[in-house]
Each structure stands twice: as structure tokens, then as C-alpha cells.
Image (tube, rainbow, N blue to C red; front, side):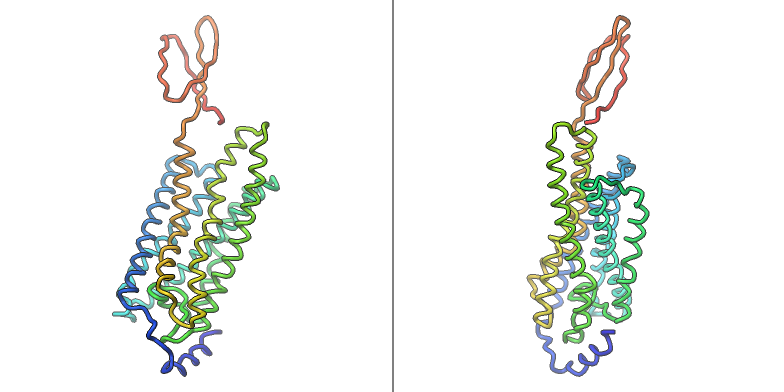
Length: 339
């Protein structure tokens, strides 16, 4: 669709295009190392968060399963950022690396859309639960299936138009070919990712802010139950996902806008920020869930102990792990309170 006409233009203009703004090998390597390092940190954070959820069996609660799906998609996305480090020597053997570059670029785009789709479903579920008082837990299979299948046709489009390749120092949808602007690739960069992602994430962020305002008003009521308070606490990390995702995508979008306006390679400083921000999609997801699980599960909780004697029955509330001296005929039945 875009490829034939654009490549013809590029072929006709290849002698007149300015290639002096291209990045040096050293600059490309710095970008790749920054991106892979941030991706490695994201892999560690997401893996630790997922392991912690599994060890503590929090996946039995639906809200934590939603967070776990986010973390697993971010883990795949972050692993692809680390894999980009393979292309440090791309320019030395382009024929060897190009097929792998196309595959990585495809899965990179699909993984971003998978994460975005899961974020949409998280926002939908929380908004319905908190504002409309509807629990759509039964739609969990739909959440998973659509998040896995929707990205595939989107990722196939650049294959058809032959738009995948080495973008600056990593693999993705290219905006230049042979040193000349590739308008088909530039359009696909915006309309296959940045424009729909920004629109969706902006709407989600507004919904989340509105939802939290509603929840905050509800939480201040005196008659709110302890189970409702617990549900609100569990929702907090999920609220952060679309907002942080939206914040982190703005700078990479600005980088692409600047590059399109310059009709060539973009500003190196912006690329340095982009090299960190893109893997940070996954890093913030893992760190948010990791901190939340630690706070929710490691904070002290009250334990009610019923103790009885031959002569009577009383009740006392003590802190968990408190050592109490008792007689041999005392019977203890621990019961976690619902705070």
C-alpha cells in the first residue's frame, strides 16, 4: 500500500537526500545499551512481582490476576528490549541480522498492543466495579483472548508494506530508507501505535481520575465496610497503569513528531530519553505491583484469639506474633480479622 510508491520516490531522490544527520555507530550503541539496560531492570522487576504473586497465591483474587496479566505482558515486552542488544553488530552483517530484526519488530509492536489492550480491560473493569457497581469478572476469558488476538493483524500490516527494519539503533517501523524520508513508515508509526495509544490512554486516565474521585468520596463515609476498604486498597496499583503508561508514551511520541518534522533522523537527546522511556512501560508495571504486594501482605494485621478455660469464656485481641504466657489448659483458635 505504502511501499511501492514511497520506495519509488526514495529511489529517485536517493542521490539528493541528506545522510549527514545519521547517527554514528557509537551513538547507536549507547542507545541500544540504555534501552537494553532499562529493559533488563524491567525484566527483573516484573519477574519478582509475578513470583511474589504466585508464592503468596494472590492470583486466586481476580484483581491480582488482572495485575498479573499486566506484569506478564510487560515481562515479554521488556525481554524484547533486552533482545535488541543483539543488533549491536547489525551494520556489519545486515543480511544475517535483518530476518531476526523483522521478527523482533513484529513481536515488539504486538507486545505493546497486548499491554495496551490489557490496560483497556483493566480500566473498563475498575470503572464498572467502582462507579456502576457491576462486577464483570466473568469476562476474564474475553479480556485475555482479545488482548492476545487483536495485536496480530496490526503487527502484520508493516510486514505487508515492508516497513519493518532498523529504526535508529533498534528494530521497528522505519521512518527513513536510504537516508530519505519514508512517508509510508512515518504514517504507520503514528497510526499503528502512537495516535490510537495516546487517545486510548488519555481517555483511560480521565476515567481513572474520575473513578478515584468517586471512590475517595465513598471511602470517607462512616458506614463503609472493612471488605470495601480492602477492595479499594487492592485497586490502587491498577489505577496507576494507564496514567503512567500515558505519561511515558508522550516523550517517544514527541521524538517521532520531531523526526517527522525534520524529515530525517531525530534529535539525539530525544532518542536518549526515548531509549529509557519505552522499556519503562514495563519497569513501572513491575515496580508498582511489587511495592503494592509488599505493603498489602507484609503490613501488620490484627489477629483475634479466642481463649477459654474450664470456668468461663472470654475474648481478647492481640497483635500477630505477640508472645502470650498461658496455662496448659488454655485453648487458642486464631482468626484473621477482616481489616
